[in-house]
Length: 398
Image (cartoon, rainbow, N blue to C red; front, side, top):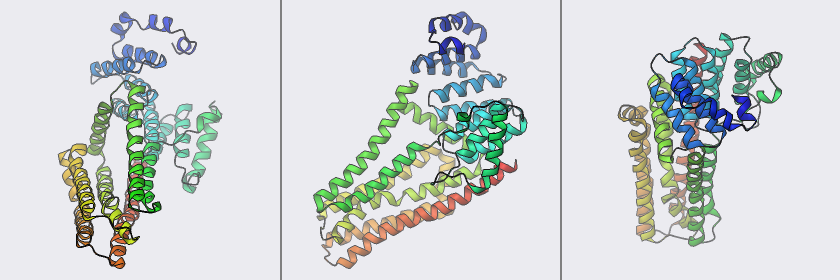
């Protein structure tokens, strides 16, 4: 089959996976058809075939069916949907190494190297003579590279051993290097950070507001372009992709108590951002000697508080009611952030309405916005890193 498609002989491939073949082979037949359609760059038809395969797959379906579904979905750039298939494959065959390899590949594409390493280690332990298991381990360890592009010291010896073993079993050197996932979120985060900083280069109110607006617009455009690109590549609408990701996130929360704790910290850390780019902008411009009119400050304050409210309302929509209650109550993080954000926005608005001309007051307001936001990010980074370390310890001990 692969030889037929790789040579561009799609007619022969379609002849093999005709309706009769699909009817005889059920889920496996649909998945083979999906793979052929994906090679033909027909994402909508390919995804339709995958959905049919998973819909008719029974509880006792062979793990190979779900593994193949995951491989096809990864090829279509649908890692969250592939994760669902990989989890079903692993549940169907807990002692199988191939589902663990698929899990490792999916987690790496999702930018979760610790999970990828844990899954690949299990695969290599289950199948010490299978080249794919050691390739997956080498790739997942390579994906742990830090900002400077170096593998952490604790993983270097294991990476060398996995790479040597994979090469000895016949792997090509190029198979051992794979890009890290999660680039989209890094790009969006960078755009948001640029939005916060851009307004400082303005020489007056108009240029400062324009620069901030452009920065935020860039972030929005990145998200929209990514969603549309994914829709074209997979044949699934942006809304359907988001719904599928949400379902996968909720599913993972059920089996991993650390994930909702990490989600609680990250949710709290997002709270000051709307205030930073609204009332923080007002305070900074006034500090620089370009005060914003009271009506504009009021609109920006309302916009910031509306953004915070939207974040709070998005938590139950994304995580579900049960986990939303845990996230919003965990450690008082969200309540603390809401209180401080309200004080920052309210204090800045009061200064604008009063027409305060004291530079020190505006400086204090601007610095408070910046310090609270960035300080919270640093504190949250430490907490999330700690939670990941504890979670990694549990993953690697099982």
